[in-house]
Every structure is written in structure tokens, then in C-alpha cells.
Image (cartoon, rainbow, N blue to C red; front, side):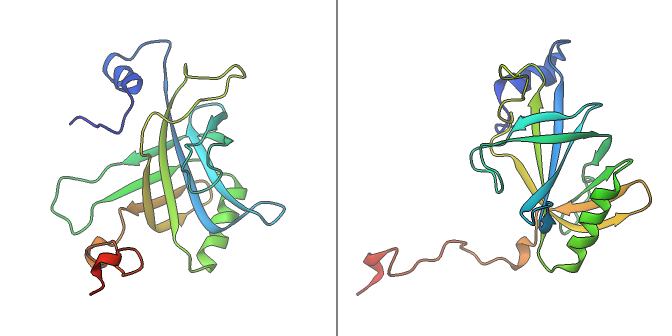
Length: 186
């Protein structure tokens, strides 16, 4: 099925698999409880590769918009939803051999009531700046999911993510107020 969110370059890479262009799949986990050593909000960023990559985030990213950030090389797997008629399709993400730092961050996230989100961004290995850093993601908009469940053992984490609870959202999503739409006032 065609995906209009993907750039022409990444569509070509998927179709022809050129040897000089590898698709770098990345995940970014965001939660209000993820803090760096200075108690500033941070995120967990991983890429499906043997090495770390510096990559530019999109200009409308939830955190660090337009900045270059490091994605740490990890092996991970994304299991897409089946073709059943479930109430809400879910995606299973498994990251192997995670560091204790990631486990600690996830333990902290469990304590706080905020939602955990994961964002998927594909990059191309040959789309780099002069410093060898990956340019913007080749998907617009990027795919962001709500993580509903996380489990961890000594070496792996597994996250179950979905598009959120659409059944209980208001419709229409936009609020029609007199302030925004003066024509409503009689």
C-alpha cells in the first residue's frame, strides 16, 4: 500500500535496495519522567544499527525540535498488528540487550502518571551533512504511538503501543468557541 508520508528517496530505497543507501530505523521514547543528569527532560533514542548515529529531528518534534540528537545503536524488532478486527491495533516493540540506564529510566516512568510515547523515524544513511550526521527524517509526519504497556527483564524490554483511545475522544476534536469563531454569537 502506498504511503504518502514517505519521501521519494526512501520509497526508492525500499523499492530498489541500493547498496549505497541503508534505511536507518529509529525509535524515540518520551516521558516526563525521563530526566538527564541536570534534571532536564530527555528521551530515550535508539537506532537499528551496529553504531550510533547523530540525526536531525523534524522541526515540529515534541522535544528538541530541529536539533541533532544521538540515537544509540541497538537491535530491535517491531511486530506490526495482525489483520484481525481488534478494537485497537497494537504494535509490539522489542529492544534487545538494553543498558541499565534505559531500565532505570523506564522504572522511573512507571512511578509517574504521564503517558509514554514512542516516535518512529526512518533516515537514509547517504543523506548526511558535512559532519556525517543524518539529515531530517524521510517521513512527514513521523509516526507517534502511545505506549500502553512495558515489560523488562535483565536484557530486553518489550513495549506494546497503539494509536491511543480513539473510542473515548470527543468529536469533533476542535472546540468551536465564540472567541475563535465570532460568527457564532447572535
